Amino acid sequence: MTTLGQIYDYIDGFAPFRNQDSFDNSGICVGSREDRVTKILLALDATNRVVDEAEALGCDLIVTHHPVIFNAIKHIDAGYPAGRALAKGISCLGCHTSLDSAPYGVSDMMVDILGFENLGITPEYNRRDPVNGEPVGYGAMAKCPPMTAKELAALAKERFKSAGIRWVDGGREITKVACGSGACSDILASAAEKGAQALVTGDVKLSVFLEAERIGMTLIDAGHYETEVIALPYLAEKLGDRFGIECVVSSADGIVRGIDG
Image (cartoon, rainbow, N blue to C red; front, side, top):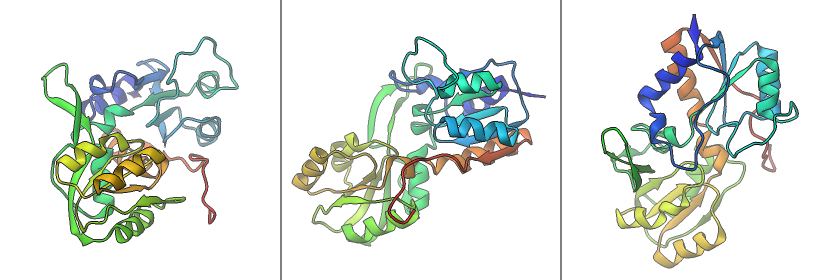
């Protein structure tokens, strides 16, 4: 029998929960270590739709990137995802910034999706592993064939299947790209310092686009969802191979649509 505790411990081995950022709530959000797991649903967010999908598919665990309980809650109601999952007997486990900053994290997956050469460099560190003292942070650096900002933007839109794309041209040929999954535009300056001519990320504010243009950095917003949902097949494969149980990537996940979708 596979338990939620075994799932937690396995994920902890390649994306240590201790290395999540201080604001995060990765780990077991609904359920207990002793809960039996027979089928897993993978989603970016455990929305009500995803919880209902898990029930319909017979999944007793939802593994998400964003924790179903992120901020403190003062009551539990079946109208909210965490309460809904609890009422249906479905456990929830989130691996958020712990997976973002893992040795092979979501930003590294972005590099692979783009087909670039990973340089093994993290653009920005903001904390240390409490066990071994190693620096922990966000993003990945990659070498790419020479290309223009427009070419990189088009490639990102295609590879991440973005609902929409926003970008600013840094005015330079691009041979080195930084990738930051989700809302990671705050690594812009450190990526530039490490020699990148471009950053591909999501959730970019106008002020950051203006700063990118000022310092000559191409900045591409390919979408928060689109740059993180790529982690789900990775997790599904690893969990399925390790425990020999069925792992399904949600089809009810994601609520934002582009004009074509």
